[in-house]
Amino acid sequence: MSNDTSPKPAHQKGPLVWLDMDQTELDNAYDQSVYAPNQAHVQARRDVSTARAREALGAPQRIKYGPTDIEGLDLFRTKAANAPIAVYVHGGAWRNGVSGNFHTPAEMFVNAGAHYAALDFTSIDNAGGSLFPMIDQVRRGVAWVYKNARETGADPAKVYVVGHSSGGHLSGCVVTTDWAGEYGLPAKILAGALLCSGMYDLTPVRLSKRSKYVNFTDEMVEKLSAIRHLDRINMPLIVGYGTNETPEFQRQARDFSAALKAAGKPHELVVGDGYNHFEIAETIANPYGLVGRRVLKMMGLGPG
Image (cartoon, rainbow, N blue to C red):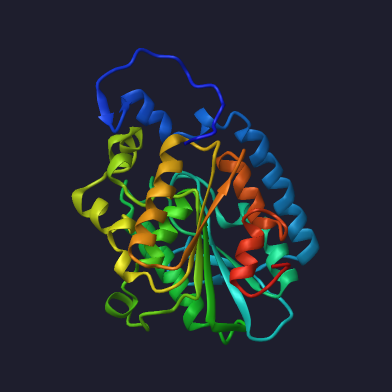
């Protein structure tokens, strides 16, 4: 059951579209601003903290992983040799954000003895409404990190992916990638992943107002719904969400966790009591935070 007590707009119930939701309720369930009235304040804190991280660590190294301008990553290096590396896949409803907005976690990872790489990739608007170019870029970015791990001072056996929100969805696609068949790499290139506040089944998302800017197709829903490709998951996962997130983001995480359990896939479900969608993301950058502590533990670092 959800513990969410944030106010919801009153309306007259219409025909059901998904589960017990009418169109307005489903649209709201895929609109974070309806359930997170402090969104702007949390994002303002993020901008301040990401600037402070750069002040503490210095500017990251910008590295290209592909031919287009957007295909790059911001790399913050730790001093340890053969260190783990965390690849961060940012959120923003598939529309907003760039890697430079998500440097806050770098300080935690670097100080704990891990490299931190924040990925850049195209937006849905620049991709003509298709998610395929976006996920291909993210996959190629992760593949680049794996293939060039030694050169960047990282251990290729310790590559981890961290994704939040729509970045959680994209990271779900990453952990269900056919690396051998599609990219000519070993079947297992990831040591673990955090999927926080993501979407793992695009069926209801297609029915929501997000279809106004995403040109969903049957192929897209089938190929880019992680819950449909559990057989490809070969690394431990952390699945997280907050109890003040939208009903659908909570359900998506619970259902994905249940499917992982039924499939015998090692994972931990982390439930943030009292956290909304944006607040739980802040805990990723805290070594003692709800999510940050668990990510570091998964990587063999931090307070445990």
